[in-house]
Image (cartoon, rainbow, N blue to C red; front, side, top):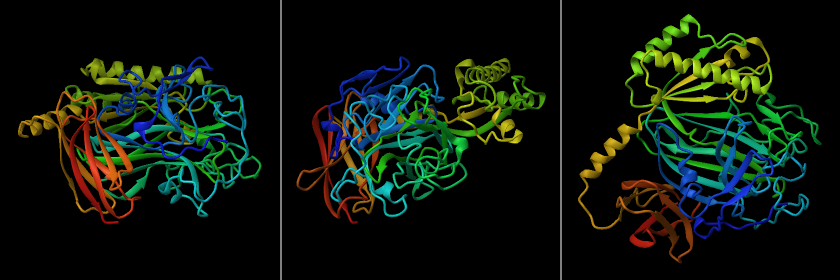
Length: 499
């Protein structure tokens, strides 16, 4: 059973650098509070890839002070080599070959049973509970919020969900769940993006599995499930999903608010986690596929014509061309990985021969880890033998426009809070600030009128910037916003929540 932690704010977190290397290749690191390669800000910034600008972030809830951090896997067994991991327990102990069937965190002395927590337990997350049936309660939530600006019209990122609930509790009420909520222009209310492909069903233990277990349920979407009972993945979780892609239509240069959330359901035992691929949060304006014959890396003539046209259009483009190689499920994993790389590098070489600069191309190889279709028939396998080409947005345009806008702002001697709008607000409000270029650390501290901290939002941008504050779960009333820059107060605002 996991330790019970109250709401942990980032200001009070003790995040000493931690390395777990039981598996030699798969490693996890808790973020350091000191500036450096494993700092919290570097962790969150490492999530934003091409075509996306990270404006701000906050750690809303954690089940412990080691509930999230970095992961690295040189072998890329999940189709990812590094990124962010969020858990309902702790990351220490995950780097093993599934040595314990009933737990996932070796920092816990033992699994202490599955008793339900009392009604006053507040470690869960209301927004996740709204996705569940039977009025189920959540525990040990971990929630991270980001404000991002896409520079193209499609926003996407990749993740894997894993759990110790597999396979014993498939079909039960112990259905650990997570969600990626997004809000912003063109999206009605708040939308959960972490769903089973081609459905609106949230990804969870019960929605993606091989069935079986104590409850005798039949398999649900097994094409997206990977059993890890033999520990071949290198994680302590008994099962994981395939590498999944999230995709959402957006408006370029608008700010979108993302909430990454995971929690235990029904009790606080048996950890679950979600791994988000580093630099996979990208925006792109166009996507193309080059398909291949079985075991082949030859680019057929029809696709050569398509690539000729793409090269002519994008050889002087300011964004990037991301090439990702894939295979079907036939053959061994090592051979599939090699073939997917051969396909991606072949497309890269072809584009370069037509004038595209090597520096404008990003290459990735997924092998059979990320099927776009089921591999049960030849049609699905044919569609999985592919190289995907994504034309990303151009971050340069965003920064050029921002520089022009900042130059029109009157010169000021100190950083400041500007305003929030709307005010009064219902649910969310945007807080604007101006941060001097030399400031190392800037954050907003939102408190109630008694001084109790509601949220801490770190500002990544300098110059004119903003952060979206979600007060939907707060009581109606007046709240105070204080801007801190390098440890000093740089401004205050009163905001009014009319819930």
